[in-house]
Length: 305
Image 1: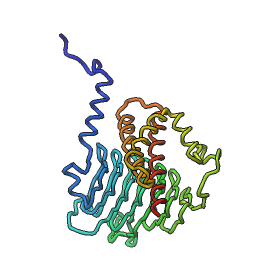
Image 2: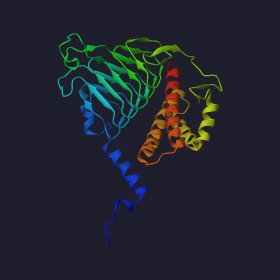
Image 3: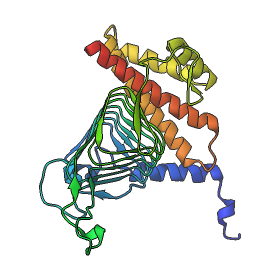
Image 4: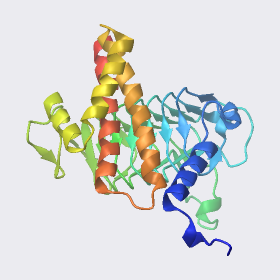
């Protein structure tokens, strides 16, 4: 019998093998690598393959974070293992898209429930050009200024956040924007190069759109989106499980829903990334689940005060 070639492999089995490989090589709280971090929260997941991880003893990861493939987290100079305060602090429920990079010499703080699209770059330092006779990349000390991204913010794909940027809560940074040093208010939209802030309303009127994408204004609209994406049964099942666990405690119900939705989003995302061909509906399902999870976490915070 002739030796089988790659063309004879069942595509479904190949996809399953790739998914299993990603799961096995990911870093979770139970992985030996997690012990090297300053803190590694429950339910947090660093997808395989990881990017560069430097100075992990100065990196704090909150709970239920999803760090996607090829993300770089660099705290301090590469290879510096000397003890020191945490340079990168990532809150609970943070999502970092593929190929994001955080480079900290002093302090980068990412608040709870921040979501970053792919290829976002964050730096808290820059090179100087004081000496005209020395190449800029060799001039020390570096210019350093802390960076903070407020909780609940959304950072669009390809955005760059520079040293000294202090971004408020629930702020949107547009795709490709470059955010320089400065204090930016809550509930702002930062667009352009350099990014400039403009305030936006707290809620979106029913039927209105932002950047051409409809945003649900209430739970009925969210239910319509779930039906359109074929997720009604999934959401109903999760709601029943959350209610069984939480009883009449509304804050606990929302926190439980957020956790269940994050888990479901993780499994959908692995399915999507392990496939050679992904439909638009599958990608939209993942986006809907992570958005709904964030909404439930925010609702729990409002109830808790």
